Length: 361
Image (cartoon, rainbow, N blue to C red; front, side, top):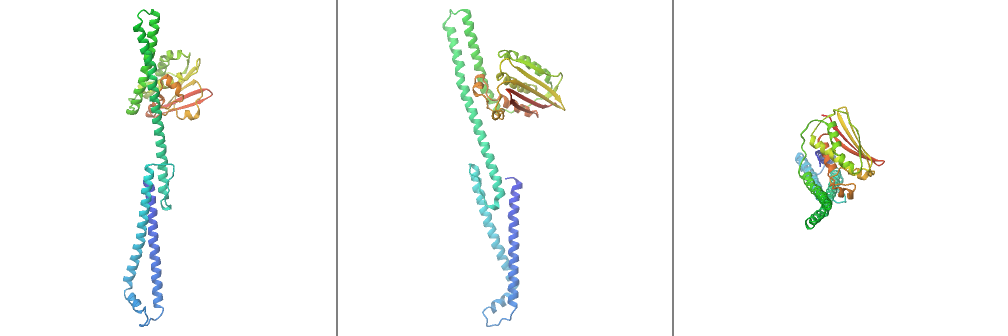
């Protein structure tokens, strides 16, 4: 519980204790006054049974009053101590329940209602955190299983074609070149899959540190557009860019290139053939905005909300075949956040749009 909640519970117990003590003192005083008036309202005779007792009380009235009041106070204090102990027992039981949170909510007495609300809030947070952790771990384990299984296919192909090249020395140059090319493609695929394992390790064990400098982001994007043209050729994709010249950005150039690299690769992987990639750059009011749009299947809202989670892949089958580990967008989001910016995604009408917003300095 936070300090505000704890002080609230303590103040309630203290105020109730003082109110009870004041009330009992007032009642005791009223009873003592009533007894005094009753005792003095008539003349008691020496032969009456209460005479000696009343006479002794009269002679020691202050002592009797103090002792009576002290006895009452001690009784009230003991009652509150026992009540506090019961509350402590309730809280102890509640913390045990909180240590292994379940679906059943925590129930406490009315005096501990603020504590009950806070403990149930912590219970719900713990349940959500445990669920997210289990889901992330399961996605990671599934991914490793997928990648480990996929390692067998290219490795088998590499071994098979190299064996053919070794055992068939009289192959024609054309067949030898073909087998060599296939073996090389499979070896490169194998390298990509192995790099995914290293990517997982780096993402889990390292922190992202920035080395900022002034960068011409317009030139950076133009260069990356040129570098991706060979990869786009397989799907006959084209660029449509609106990049004003000389837009400067204070950033870690290597890290920011990684962000744009992940976004562009993602757009190419999920674009429809013979479609354009639209890249725009804007600089206004001290902020730089980069948008990348591609034509592709509309991403459902439930998947769109989770695109930036670690190890999440909106299309598991396609991502596995292309070597995606579901880390690219998560790492991109982390890098952009470290720069004080934001990255969002939206999808509608068979279009997917990623928007990166960054402070210019």
